[in-house]
Amino acid sequence: MANLNPKLYSKDVEQVPIRNGYGEGLVAAGELSDQVVALCADLTESTRTQAFAEKFPERFIQVGVAEQNLATVASGLAAAGKIPFVTSYATFSPGRNWEQIRTTICYNDQPVKVIGSHAGISVGPDGATHQALEDMAIMRALPNMVVMAPCDHLEAKKATLAALEYAGPVYIRLAREATPVVTTGKTQFKIGEAVEFNPGSDLTIIACGPLVYEAMQAAKQLKAKKISAQVLNMATVKPLDEKAVLSAAKQTGAIVTVEEHQVTGGLGGAVAEFLTQHQPVPQEFIGVRDRFGESGEPAELLEKFGLKAKHIIEASLKVIRRKRQLNVVSKIDKKKVSRPNKRSSRKKK
Amino acid sequence: MTIDQLDIKANEIRQDIIKMLVEAGSGHSAGSLGMADVFTAMYFAVLHHKPKNPDWEHRDRLVLSNGHICPVLYATMAHAGYFSRTELKTLRKLGSRLQGHPHRGTLPGIESTSGPLGSGLAQAVGMALAAKMDQARWQVYCLLSDGEQDAGNNWEAVMMAGKYRLSKLTAIMDRNNIQIDGVTEDVMPLEPVKKKYEAFNWHVIDIDGHNIQMIINATNQARATQDRPTLIIAHTTPGKGVDFMEDDYRWHGSPPGKVETERAPDKAEQAKVALRELRTLQGKIKSEHQ
Ligand SMILES: Cc1ncc(C[n+]2csc(CCOP(=O)(O)OP(=O)(O)O)c2C)c(N)n1
Ligand SMILES: [Mg+2]
Image 1 (tube, rainbow over the protein chains, first blue to last red):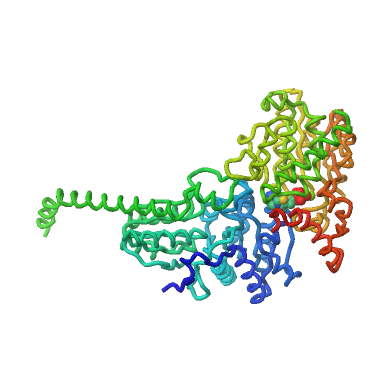
Image 2 (image 1 turned 30 degrees about the horizontal axis):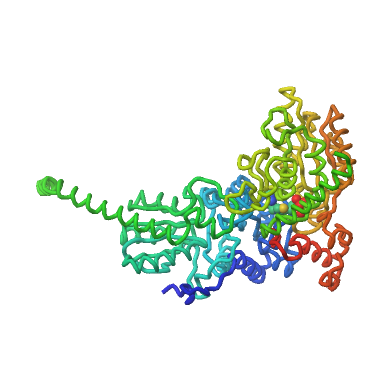
């Protein structure tokens, strides 16, 4: 069992911004290692670096509105033995400073932890310029980079501490809005390991970030329709838990990926790239489809961009239909070719 | 319009800014209110433009680099006749043309998308280069903030404008001495900013950003400068025009006289509380710093 929040399906489930977990994790990391330093680019409070800055003022570095400098200075600090956590909004870091991250952090293989807050459409009224929808794609494409998208504030804290333990570059994406708490302190978490949040046999929903909650709601409603949906929490998008994805594809034969990100290059892309090579099965993608976000309330935007439980349910029904069609076709195919095949194989023997 | 009429217009714009921010429930109040006089001067006395024909090819270009102060841009554009003032109520709402940060294409009259800081000046440099190549009659005005001077890409553009002697380019900096994490000189010292721009071959003029006559005079001077780009440093008071802030709050940290502020233990803390009050319009809206 995944030890999830017992109130997960109740109306009064606690809601906490995912970024808060980073703030707590950062303070804990600072307590565990005095090599931890935190850098921020004029967004200390909203990225939740504030508590660390107050507790360890001598280890907090304000770089101003200068995200390229943020990443590059952090690389230098790491080269001299520090473990830097650098924080801004994801559109600016890793958005604006991608090449600096590529060369000075990833290619140099320095243990800089890049934290992108305010990722996803749920940023809301600030609009498209502030809604990072491509960050996982650009980070996932970088050699040496680990990419994590925690589903709630508790998991964000665990991811932050795991990033401290991990010796190389890490990217963690965080969300702004209060998000329903899916996990508990006891829910297991390890870089690179998917966790089954719901068992199921008809299809597998693979989700990351705040939409894991929507995936769980979808699985519950699908159950009422007599459809058994497995839910995998894929908190680490890179390295992908290939074992978990492979066995899901083999067992359920139908996949829906769910992320608050462009459908290209993120979690869905990672799963599809892997499965086409090893176990091709029908896959549906929940995510943003090659467009920019816009201003609006977070809930309105999730609805408009098709990221709610009901959209996951539609995608699930569709992927199951596709799986059945495929099964029918493959049965017909087998009938057609079975005799000559058998004959030829007998001949061989 | 006379200067008196322009002052009245600026205050009407301030009132609309507060109304639209409260209606939206979030957004940036301090810089928007502080720049109302500059925007009024620009749209009602300086720019050659046709609000009913926003794409008029000979229009002066106004690039807002610090897009978060778009409430003042939208309110001024509405007053100038680009669109109806009733639309101001839609700020930041789903489907609105008044996006949380301005988007080129959504709202006619927006020259460029902004919000991510530090990118406006380079675009203005591109426009001014094109204007120079084409011997166009229009000017390029780029509105900048002091916080975004931290960004390296801003200085790449500063250096380049000096290289090409882009006299058609005028930058106007909102020198309000604050950014999100506090006072600019604490976050990332900027002074002596005038000397820095001059060293890059710019003509620099310091003005009171609330004196509309001075704003107009400075832009005239900039147009008359034929061999260099001009930077107008507009010294402004963040939150200008809001009674509970204006007279009591200065960038160097006098409190606005609220009980909560008075209780704050030291000067730095008082300034922080004052800023919080201002940014949230006394708790009426959500601010980005939160
Ligand atoms: C590239 C980039 N980094 C960070 C931000 C977040 N941000 C928005 S406003 C702001 C403060 C900048 O200072 P200034 O423009 O002087 O603010 P104001 O005086 O209007 O309060 C910051 C850091 C941003 N918009 N763009
Ligand atoms: Mg400022």
